[in-house]
Amino acid sequence: MTHYSPTAKTLALLPKFTGFLSFLGSTYIFQDVVIHRKTVHRVYHRLVLGLSCSDIIASIVNILSTWPIPEGSDGVYLASGTTQTCTAQGFFNELGNLATPLYNASLCVYYVLVIRDGWKEDQIRTTAEPLMHLIPIIVAFTIAILGIPFTLYNNSGWLCWIASYPGKCEGDTCTRGEHADIFRWVHYAIIWSAILSVTVGMYSIYRKVRDEERIQSQEMDEDAVRRGGKSKKVAIQAGVFVCALYFT
Image (cartoon, rainbow, N blue to C red; front, side, top):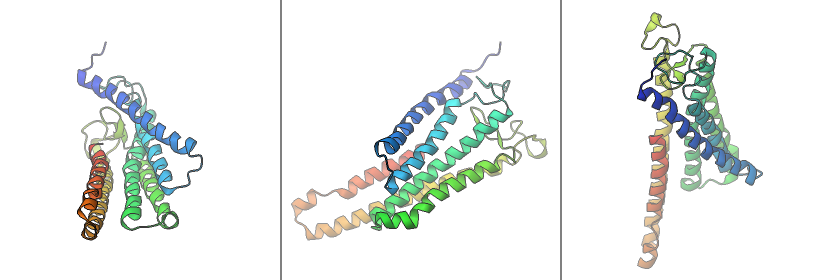
């Protein structure tokens, strides 16, 4: 009987619980937008719908955790899949984990256009919305599809993702995923570009609200100024939005 370390068991089981919680949250948002709002008539709702769909994909990947990893993989608890199931999980893992931060960046762009630049709904719908969907979808699908011919999707420890095989191989010694290091750099470059764009966008919104508040405070009495504080509220909301990206 094979014995597995506590770490191996934790890596296999913990993502199932966290992934399930994330799945419930994203599914609730999805059904709230689709069912209760019937017609998704606002740009904001369509962006949230896209974000929810990408997060649902990533959540399901986490729920599966080690199951799709080829059976018999050394030190991997509950591994019961094949190379094909591992490739499938790796594809959807890359798809969901790239589309999610990029959709967050699109949502941030929407906030910037509405709050900072004062764009109207029709203007955003016709000018900016197509790109808000196309960039996350095209980028995520392109990188995810490229991983298939390059045989990038292999056992990465607790799920199938971009990894070389056998583990820690280099160059010609790898039978699969010899270009894994390059694609990991591309993956993280895309994610951090999205995170940094959200950070800059949220800060620009805060600056806009703060500057308007200062102008208004010069024209209002002290009681009205004390009733203000919009910039602080915006700073808190922007901080929460950005921190959620950094921590996830």
